[in-house]
Length: 620
Image 1 (cartoon, rainbow, N blue to C red):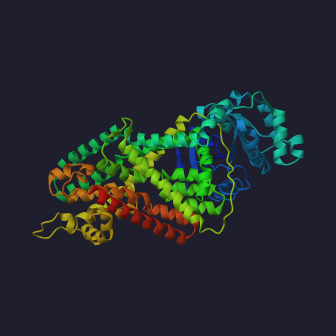
Image 2: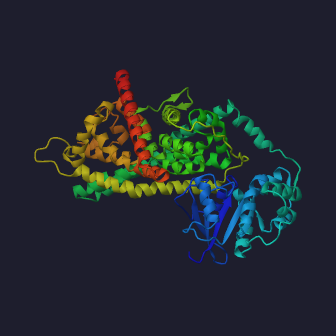
Image 3: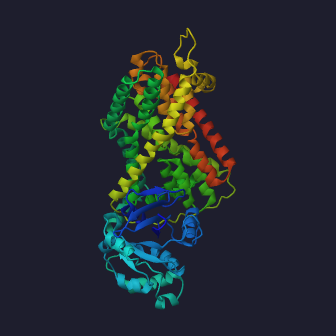
């Protein structure tokens, strides 16, 4: 795309920039390496009616080019042409929330002062009209000296006009004087003069937002609402996903039997059925739960609720040594700690940023969900509490809450070791509530599914084969009485590690699975599936699902105490190696990585030890 038209989207957070990007590019987008409003900077492409290719760069949201945080630095440097890999952009699309011109026009004036080619996109025009705002768009365009396109990105309105403007290259450098606006005062004074000249207000109130804020920002009902929403999410993760998971599990079971019938060589049969199909199938089955979790996160983000949750929790998080601005990076860590840690670039205070990085791995990422789902299905009965609540969903909710409370405790402890004790006020824009953009949610879910399946097809596939090899070779000697895996490389390593983890209730099979878990958490399920498939001594045991196999009371089963201990282990154990590498890249310090690894492993061992000992005493 060397001859493609290069445009970059610039705007304040919550201006509708991401929705516009999704409508322009659809699924033709990829994620780059630095964070922004939606955690990652994205690059996409589309084609105009004339056949002209367009490359779109979605820059991190910023209120000003006077950068105060790492993600704002990225936007500033791209606008100023300082990032070589991005080069010069043919045009900058300045996305502005029409309902909040007083705040958003400040960035536009800064862009005008830099003399960049600009096309101003006046977004959320439907909401502006609903509030009784009358904007003289033609006059605003004349006063600023730049062309303006009206859009409603979430409804795809105005997109055709925007495409036509790009087709005819209507973006220009500011070519007119700003008359009296340019001659007087600072930018905020210019904006006041502009608004008096081009905007008429009939009704200043947003009654819908005011009504909802009385509930969601209330010191009591707001926290109750947040807890209820989170509770519903975790109930839905189990209840809604069950039929889809059953279908996927049945398919892979049938597929393994079908393929196995056509492979006569025993070793090759074992590799394909026990290593590849069982390993991949054991992870893919949890895709519905992950997508349901992401669906709720995306809906909350699109609706404008997340900044309010950050504001609501600011006081509580400050007492624990964090700020409300840490809420969104930590929430992102529920999906994956890597973008969560990258999103801390939006935190301008270095102390708060480092503390947030330290506790981000304690948020339960989606890679842990397959492990939780397996162990909960195996050891927690499918019973209803008071006829309303699924016990398995309650346990899942408790695991997530345990991670959150542990993060607050860790950050509280870290606060005492920090030299800087100053307070930092939280300043955050609270956007109007809006209906979620269906297309943006769909693209977000599709991206998440692709990422997850790519991991299954890549790293998990490779590790499953490697683990099968380690579990299969060397072959048992003549006259061997134990399962073949006991004589393999993996069996030797598992037995070597077992004394270290025995106080936690872990058997040697679990010890083996912990090793590939450092590459990707969800590999644990595939690893256990492979290990137990090769540990079984009869066909009946091999035909059982993994959850049934470890909980049926047979030779290969675990005690309830062991299952609970392993659940607790994964609340605290360090994330994958990619997470630790991200911490190294973001902090530039191996010392930070070492400290994080040691404290997380120490917490995991201590809490699992306590859990196993207490559960063994009371549950037998």
